[in-house]
Image (cartoon, rainbow, N blue to C red; front, side, top):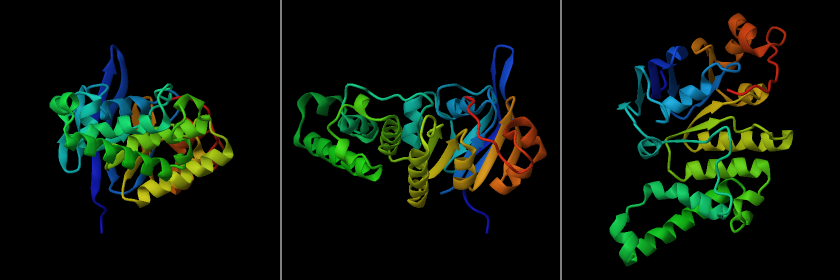
Length: 266
C-alpha cells in the first residue's frame, strides 16, 4: 500500500539574477516520514527550505501540503498551515528565558487578538496559562525543563539547538523542517538529537532534514533526495543513495558506498 503524501514539490525553480538556485526540483514526503535533503555546498538546499517556508517566492512550480495548494507569502503563514522550521544559524531571543522562547512559538496558535491584549479578560489569562503549560511540556520533551527560567544565551550550543526545535514544535506543526540541526554538536549531542528526531516522527510529525552529518542522515532518514547545482540528481532510500554514482561524485566523496562526513554549508 502506497504511503499517503503530506508534502509535494513539483517543478520548483528559483533564480537570483542570472543564477538558477533551483532548477525544476520535484519531490514528495510521506506522512510521518523522516526525509533527508542533502547536497554539496551551494546545491540549493537552504534555498529550497526558504521557498517552502515563505522567505522566497518561487519563479516556477508549485507546492502541495496536506492535499491543498501551498501558496504562502510570508513565514508566519506557513506556520499557520502546519509547517515549522529551524535555521542554520541559531535564532533565539538571548535575553529571554528558555520558557519564554518556547512561548513565543506557541503564540502563533493564540486567539486573544488586540482586544484581549488590551483589556485582558479571563479568557486571555486562561489562554496564557495554557501556553505556559504547553511550553513547559515541550521543554520536558526536549530535555530542557530544568533550564526553563534561565536566559537562552546561557545554554550550551546543543541545548540551544534543542530549544529551537521546542519552539518550532510549539506551533503544533504537521511537518518540521530542520536546517542543519547537528551543526556544531559533539557525538553525544548528535546521538541525543537523533533520538529526538525519531521521537518527533514517532509522535506523528513529519520531519524534513537538511544535514551534513552523513552518519546521522543515513541512520535516521527513511528517504533522501540529493541536490547538486540546484537540480535533483537522486531520490531514494539511504541504501540506494549511498550506491548512486552521481551522488558519490557530486557529494559523498568517499569510497563506493562509504559516505564521507563533510563540513560544507548549504
